[in-house]
Length: 282
Image (cartoon, rainbow, N blue to C red):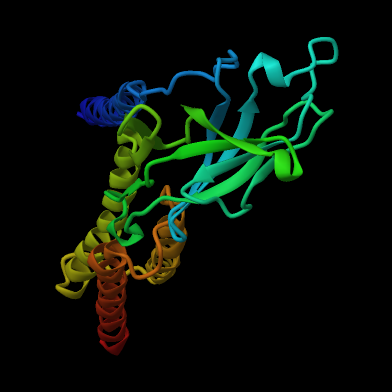
């Protein structure tokens, strides 16, 4: 009889471990499958053209400030480049629209053009995290060739390249010379956000079940569980802060999930403390 019980116990333990392992593997495979559909932008194209080319490489999106950091590189036509040294044979400045924070981006004569970090606006609402999207104004560029009174303005081709981790990047051509960049969160990021939200919701649910069953007398009061409630309470903020994209304080996630979790955990802890009082009063 005891051997049968031991066998059943081992089978239950083995089955539980196998189910947990399958869930873990399925979550990894699912996340990999979702993340594998990451759309890419064309790679950097250094090919010179008959007219100046301004290459815009995406770097970082600051959602709270509606700012998009980019790297700007000039690909000059052969007529502006010294063939022997590979350097510019004239001063060149780039005006990027919408206007960047650095004003004109200057590429001096006698130097090889290097990427310049700049910032442009990307409009969106960070409080809608994780369903927020950001869109730039139509991006165009002009190139000023020469120096002093001899400078002349030439239209430039704009090429968008690069990728931002965790974001889908779509480039729309509004006309022959203007490009609009739209950024939305990747499905893999949304899946991770959903997982963290489910963990946050599960914490108070488990705590309430334990507290209610204890105060009803269906489970024995265990003093060490008081520290378990406190640990869960202090775990909420770190879990919230690891959400991809760092939603701004006061976003809907705080009102709909985090606040509920804190209230429910404090309520569960209060119920358990009441059970403690009743236990020691007897």
